[in-house]
Image 1 (cartoon, rainbow, N blue to C red):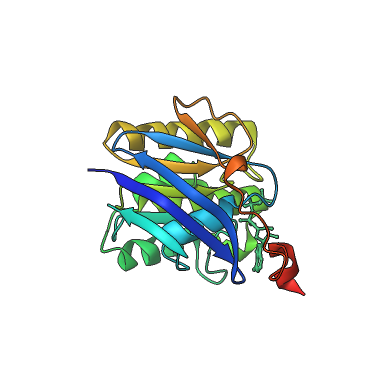
Image 2 (image 1 turned 90 degrees about the vertical axis):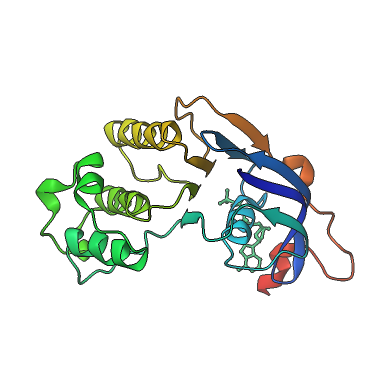
Length: 205
Ligand SMILES: Nc1ncnc2c1ncn2[C@@H]1O[C@H](COP(=O)(O)OP(=O)(O)OP(=O)(O)O)[C@@H](O)[C@H]1O
């Protein structure tokens, strides 16, 4: 069984952002989330990952199965690369960090404090974190930001391996990862701004 999303309405700051989001994400499949800046990709991923409630609709098959990589890498600056991975492995009841270190060529950096890494190195570590969660459904928000070409290829290889082992992935990205994946364009699902509530941008004011 995979993730099933039906007629989901998601919000930011109390203002609807997307309405009528429906899709299936079966095991072994990737879905690429597309839409212009501000369309609601992050909001949708955060909602599916359980970081914020939906306004309405149904999500089934995601309970405790989702691992989410946000824009921020979620690293502990004062822990080393290995210690960061060990920390997250422990949180998810896993042990092995060597596979994750290897997948993103992090072995030479294993004893470096995460806070001293470059932006691309931090991103590689943040993505390696997904491999120590043991969770099958990956949600990735702009995963390739700061990655060089080799690291993008490395990331695509890791995702392909994850899919081949029965995992699935929902990926918000503006670039072509070379993965065989369907595309979900959320542009037409943008909620109409409520004249009384204002546009979602105004929720900042
Ligand atoms: N913390 C917040 N409070 C209120 N509104 C927000 C907040 N964060 C984002 N928004 C608004 O919600 C809408 C959807 O934003 P979201 O970040 O989900 O878009 P996105 O598709 O991920 O954009 P991008 O491609 O720029 O990352 C936008 O109008 C945005 O301005």
